[in-house]
Amino acid sequence: MNNAPLYVVGLGPGDARCLTPQARAALDRAQCIAGYQLYLDLTPPELLRGKTVISTGMRHEEERCAAAVDAALAGRPTALVCSGDPGVYALAGLALETLEARDLLDRVPLNVVPGVPAVCAAAALLGAPLTHDFACISLSDLLTPWETIQRRLSAALEADFVCVIYNPRSKGRPYQLGQALAEARRFRRPGCPVGLVRKAFRPGQEVSVHALADFDESRVDMLSLLIIGNSESRALGPYLLTPRGYANKKRS
Image 1 (spheres, rainbow, N blue to C red):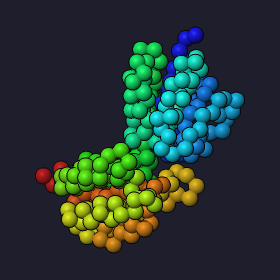
Image 2 (image 1 turned 30 degrees about the vertical axis):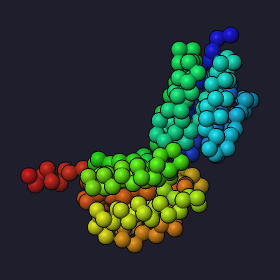
Image 3 (image 1 turned 180 degrees about the vertical axis):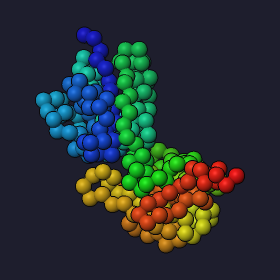
Image 4 (image 1 turned 120 degrees about the vertical axis):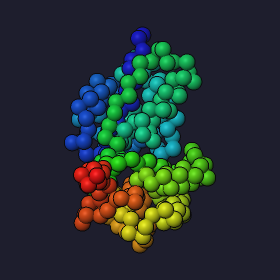
C-alpha cells in the first residue's frame, strides 16, 4: 500500500470566507481529517461529510499528530487542521518532528498549506498596526520558560518593535499579562495605543483600541490577541496606525 500525503492545513481565523482555495482543496482531497475539536468546529461541515474525523482535546497535540501520520501510512490522504497558519504557533513543526522521530520523512509526503494567521486577521480589523517592524510573542509558558518569554518581550519592547501578544491570558495563568503590560509601560508612553481583538472573524467578534496606561487586562482571554504599538503608533478613532514613514520621507 502506498503512503498517502499528510496535509497540515491552516483554517485561518475561523470564518469560511477566510479559508484559502488551497486549504479548501486540501480538505476536499483528504479522506481523514484530524484536529482539536474547536478547530473541527471551524471547518466547513461539507468538507467533513463522509470522512473519518479524528478529534482530540486541548494539549493532546502529539497524540493528534501521531494519529494523522498513522492514517497517512494506512493509505488515506489526511489533513491535520490548525487555526490561523500551521507554521505560526501551530502544528507544522510538530508534524515534521513526528515524521523525523519515526524516520518517515522520505515515506510520507508532507504538504504544509498556509492560512491567514491570527495576527493578520487582527491587524486587518484594527486598520494598519503592522506596517512597520513587529514581533510576535506568545505568553504561554507550557512549552517555553516564563523567564525566556520575559527576556524576549523586554528585548522587543526596548527595540521599539510593535509587539503582538499571542495566548495573552488564561484561567491558569492570569498574572502573566499584567507583568507583560507592566514591562510595556517601562518602554512606552502612557498613551501608546493597544489594540484588542477577540474572536476575529467569528460570531461575537470584539475590536477595540485603548491607551496603554489604563488598559484593563480583565477584558482579555485566550480567544484574544493584543497588539501593543511602538513609539510612532497612534490611535485614529477605532483604528490603530503604525506609520511606515512616508510622511517623514516627504519632509526630508
